[in-house]
Length: 79
Image (cartoon, rainbow, N blue to C red; front, side, top):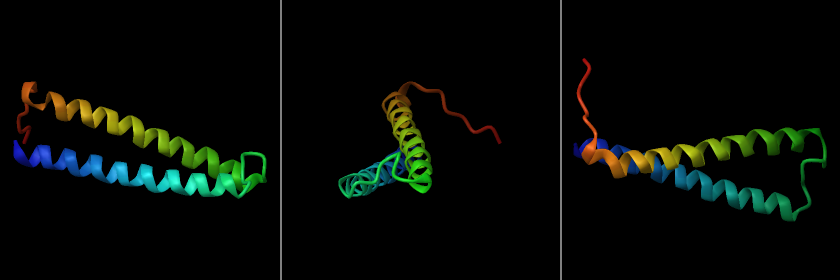
């Protein structure tokens, strides 16, 4: 289904955009000297955004797998 493929591509594109922007933000903060032990705010900032970054990266791997295997999947409408 073409719409399914376009949806997966769009989702991966938005995910990639998030990862690139967040990487640039992480790099900027790191070079300014903010780390896990800077203060309580940055401890939570690094942990929460880092876990979200990881979550998006794993999600993109799963979406890429689904995109590459879509021809062999049995997709049906459950409604």
